[in-house]
Image (cartoon, rainbow, N blue to C red; front, top):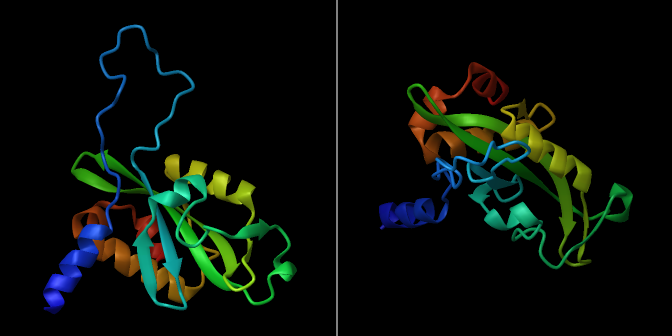
Length: 173
């Protein structure tokens, strides 16, 4: 029974990985100024509940955590906020197969009862961009959240983890 529940949980945690290039083979398109979010997935790390999950709604600030919340940029306006991390994970295909290419985290707090939250939208956009460019930005995360993230990434796909950079593995030790 426990294995069934784990399988069910695993199947609901899906990354968007390695789609076909929609402009591949188009002779008149040079690709200038275009980028794709197809290889990126947002993870939510909830250190209070020891939970990590994929939430594609975060791509448009509509994750489970963000829905029906008014966000402010002053953390003091959310004194009873619960901490979360949105982690932008980009997967690329290397010589030996797919791996975690860029991983960048953003902090937010949410007070469900007050329907208020703290986040800096510019930081989220910039971290998303850094992940797409293969940057690892996780140093500001607390150790517990890093451990949750590391375990999730390893459990999701051991091969992706093994093929990832030493930089990612070192930051998440």
